[in-house]
Length: 273
Image (cartoon, rainbow, N blue to C red; front, side, top):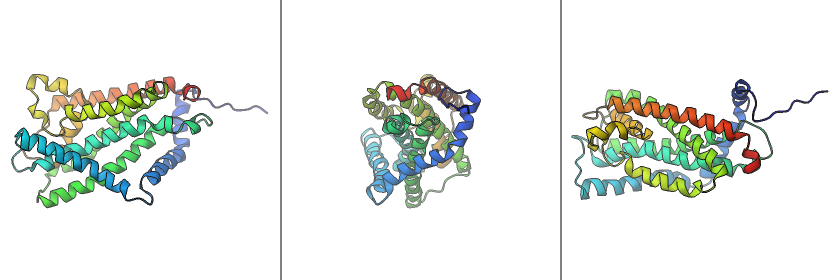
């Protein structure tokens, strides 16, 4: 009787079929992470709200009170900041969670074959739950300020999908690199902290000089944040279409190159992890 040997370097088409075959493992990993974070604890839910709220308060004080940056007409500054905090916090959490996901599941990876792509993908799902929890507070904030979102809010799911894609693309790179270079465990928090200040979370991207806006849009989260504000705040929030196209291209490149690099080094994970 012949034996079937399953390896990580299988044909590409078979690999993508395996992703569907191992969908239950994907559900299990995502559900396990959610249980660890939220089961029999209040801190997990509170922390999902506390981090963006604290950051919103700090950025509001810095930009509105100290720097005297005016908000758009009819929009309160906390609402402006929180609309930027939502996608940014999702992106930052996904980087941290997916980046450490392979190392955290080293026992599973070193013993059993399955498409390793499942592991960082399930971590992004966990971060998405935090995003949904914080999203409920955005609704509360709009009710408090008696703010009615415009009709283009129907396009918000498209920008949520773009945020998910950007998070997944960068997460694949970080996860694969962290297996071989553990120094990324120190670098990732710095990237997240630095990215908060160079992304238009506490201010509008229109404050960036016009000659630099296209270059600024190479940051994939810029287009996501601008899209969120356009959908939720409306009014004078206009999309910068050249920047949106650049951000979309950057996200597509991140995903394609991230998958390609991840697949290239995936077969070595069990040896070096």
